[in-house]
Length: 611
Image (cartoon, rainbow, N blue to C red; front, side):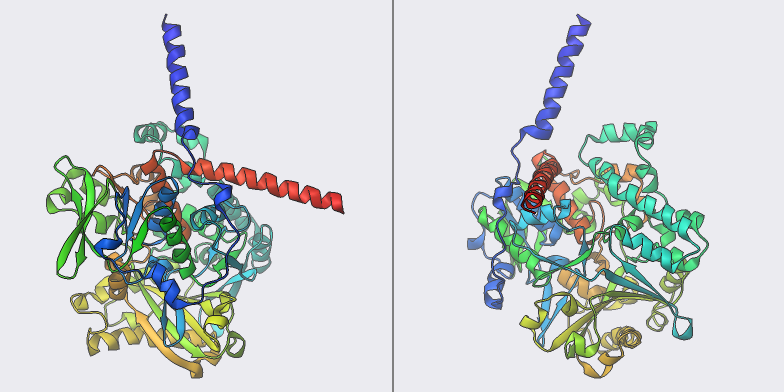
């Protein structure tokens, strides 16, 4: 009798599992992908898509989902849900959609704000398939030169330079040539890169299976027996790298992607993933970063939804039963209610829980518990420079430059962030230089004879906090002079790399943490959202930090779900859509990947026969 009951239970469990994994219709299909159309260069036509202002008559009827924020995480969640049959409205507080993927044009120059390059979009990669699905094949990528990054350490005669190349085998081989006495350390680090890249989906899947199952697997030690990735995610990068090598330059190279957290406080898994991300090549969107939002929004519109800008959400509406049922949108001096049974927030956990929920909901224990998992990220400082002249004339290249004054990142970052407001501008320890006009093959078509450069560094919000209540572009001379002290030092440093730009500068603009708060809605100016400290990546924290929230029908998307960057935020969108649909859309993407690989194999086979 008991055997029969057990057998029936197993059959029911197996059937339920199969239905959960494979029984629901896929939002994705090969048929929805079509050849890319001609590029739209008419800015007025583009603005009709990415700058469509909010008004009540533009809100679709019978909405299924409202998405707050049009960054890549929100747009990915929105497009995936739209393709699954949901009517989606994306609301953006800025006057242009795209979040960190938007570009802005000033004085004939076009600047990228947050997308500087992207990896893992080679043919038939999972990320490329995802992009193809949410844009229905309309987004094209330009592969950059194999030499995609240069790292400079030190100044003047003490400066050392290391180059990073893409390539399945070339990346490691090229690094070994530069550090011939450190081959064992490099070999060991690349093994960690491989494990991180191949097994990170174990961590991500913990956000999709029942939490009690995850916690049981972690607390019992079973998860660690399955893969080392659960231990690596919570291992500080410095602790691990120090066991591989004592070479300080190589230690920096293993952690050169800075995002506001020193290596001793960051996860070795995340740092390894960032380098591995470009192993199969670095890419840039043809037509510029704004192409991403331009095409994803059209997918959402195709299925009955819309994306409206100048639509600042002031409150998430929650009923007496504790369920989200819509939002309030500021329209002039009034507030307009927009209702939907599902609300997705892509504006970060701090904004969502601390600004958009009423005080009586904010103070609830489970909300505070979620907030306590995260810390505020460091602010970003960006400088946008425009030059008269082409890349060839100015000696500009598509390769990015990462500049460091010292090879001890832990100490230099700790010292810098401990400095006073007055000391900081003259002691910037690191910066990143990117030249978008040298990456996009169509830049000279849109803006002939011009080049642009974006420089990024990390700063403390507190250095700019005294001006937080002032208005953008009207913050006064003291603020302007202070931010320009940073800008001058950054530009002078950049001129040591590209000396020809100094006399060709015709435009310069600066974005401080306050600017990022105004235009991007980034809390404390943190473009990478919540801090990516190692505690955030403890396996148990990863399992608890889910897309679902303590407020029923309210979900989180974007960088705060898993990790920062365009790819990280996109995966946050896919994880969010999976949670809303109660269906793992990654399975559909993997099935498409298999189909595409078989198709490619058949095509190659036919070519071989013809030969």
